[in-house]
Length: 288
Image: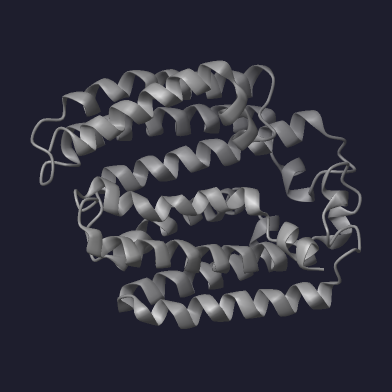
């Protein structure tokens, strides 16, 4: 039972919650040992909260997922884990996150509460509304960054937040595009069929352009209070643009149904991503 419950919380998706560490890393406070207990607490609280929402979402989509070629093997869709048990676990996990966030500044509580409320509404209603569902899913990534910033009381660059939002929107749009072009209309969610490939192609291009532009603006203007020499950050724009271009071209030519898997297995993404992370780390930790 415990193994089924764990799989239902989608451990592979927990990596998204590492976004809560961005505030500490980009604010110049990474060497302050006092911030790390709060950031680690923030990470696990958000992980509990997001895990609870995955359970709620899968209970809501149980019938639809049962007809999907991949999702039908999920614990809830396959019937191995009862909806009642899943909802009880979701309530427990969300309660733990709400109680635990009391140890963090008040702003963190409101951000986490907003995430839980928005996600529940999304699962029940908003996920069936075209465009709105992409906006909601993408906003979840930015909320993670704000939560981490609130946990240690540091400001966040507006350019970095917009860049993260644009990047998450690009990924979500790519997933919708892949679902629309690669699956039987009888299998995909009804909202997917409300999109046209042309709309998704243009939206994906716009999101990728916004992502590259706002990232460059962040390297130029977003860290003036914490970094004085940003040479490595400037150079990091090159592998960053290469990675975005590769992702967009993959989306247009072959589709990106599993963005996480593509980011980790494609050779171009591996090389450009490794160089980008190295330059980003040098820009943050060396040029200070």
